[in-house]
Each structure stands twice: as structure tokens, then as C-alpha cells.
Image 1: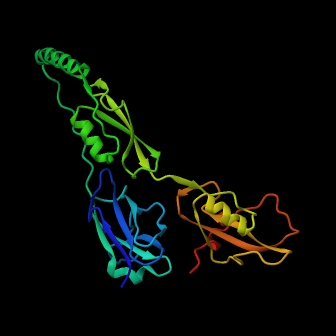
Image 2: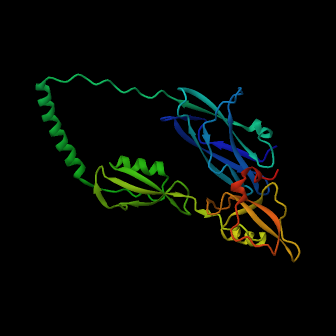
Image 3: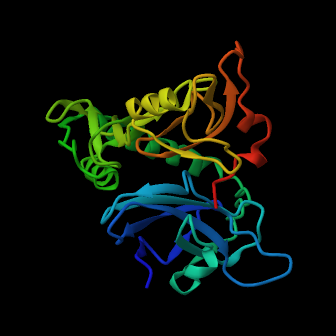
Length: 309
């Protein structure tokens, strides 16, 4: 029985302008860490295979024993006809084939609606009604301006989930603007707000919210380094290291030979989640050979930097 389980935030996704998303919670029930992949596959078999319309940032992750990871799955059916599209999500071990977990697949139904048609322009009103409407409109604008200029206290939404914070501010008469901020706080919660809580602000004004996102690590510059030094750099950056298919060594041996990193995937300088898995390709090199400008072979020939099977 598989130790990898998954739950979805919703079995259906109502797409707006062809776009939508859901959250998949994947749990590792094994006694040790597991390299887990969340994959999207066609919901029905067809030739050629139907598109999944899915994008999953960082689909391969190492999940600690008993831990749960949140995967954000984005969908984009732009250009597709209105209708329902089934997409199959499977969480599986990177050491196995996804077909081995087919009985645990979750089918998500995407609903794409036809864009609303632009209404035809209405015929003009008689002049009398235009004048009457203008007077009424000016009176209404005056009332709205008075209402908007009336200051109210900004609610305290720090630490609340984004959707809840936005609704609280909306109910209080404010609009919101959000930006992401790397933080150790729970992902998706409000880190800061401006204006601050209990400050007076005009009704209808905008409250700026910074939303917590996981703190990222930067892939260190390890090209040309001995694997022992590369491991130290990865530990300092809080990133996990694994070897690609075709790596010829995992440690240095002898006085004249070193195990050297010649490829990194993702590339040096890329931002990844903390504890994410970064692949390196290694080769045995003579210590007397110096490479002043090493080339990332994983970027030049990505097909040779696949995960070890």
C-alpha cells in the first residue's frame, strides 16, 4: 500500500478568463523522507493525448517523514472552447512510475465558460432626460464623495489568510492591493499592512497587504568545485543535493584525481524553495587541469542531466 497520500482543495475548478488554480496537499506516510513528484495527466485516454492545461511549480520535492507539502496547481485553458475538461493529478515516488499510483489518482474537472459578449450600445436618451439624469448624477456623486471622504479605522488583518483579510477589508469599505514577501510566517497569510491597523483612512481607499511566501534559497556557484566543497555550499544554502544520471563519481579519490561538479540543474543563481532538491552532474578530473571558466553542462545539454532512475 502506498505511503503517499493526497487531498485537493476542490475537485472542480471554475475558470475565469480561462484561468484558475487549486491546492494539493501531499503527505508522506513513510518512516523516512521521500522524493515525491506531483504530475498532471490527461483525464481521458485519447490519440493524440489531450492537453492537461496544468502548470505545477517545483513538482519534484523531498518530503520528510510524516510531513505534508502544499502544491499549487495552475490551470490555463486560453484558446480552448467552452466546456468541461478532466485532468488527472497523481502524487508518486520519483523512484517509481506514475502508473504504479494510478489507483490513487484524483480527477479534477475544469469548467471553462464562454466569455461574455460586449453589450451593444444603447440608443441616446432625449435631451430632457439627459438633463434630469445629469442633475441626479451630480447629487449622487456629491453623496458618494461625502461618504468616501468620511474616515474609518482600518481593521487589523495581520496574520490572517489572504482571502479572509481581503473580505474583512472589503466589508469595512476598503479595496486591497497585494504583493508577495518572503517570510517564515505561514504561506498565504498577511505579513504587513499599510495603513496599519486602527489607523484612520478614507472609506474606499486602498490597503496594501504583503502576503507571506516561503523563504527561497539561491543555488550556490559550485561549477568546477570538488563535490566535498559543493556539499558544504549546499548545506549552507539549505538545499539538498542529488546526482544526475551519468554522474561518474560521488566523492574524490586519490591525490591526483578529484570529483568535480560540471553541471547544475536548476542553474547557479536560481531561486528555489528551502530543502528543495538540486541536481548536480560530476566527472573525475585530474587535479593538474584548471578550468577558469567552467560551463554548466546541464544547461548546454539538459537531456544528460536527468534524475537517476
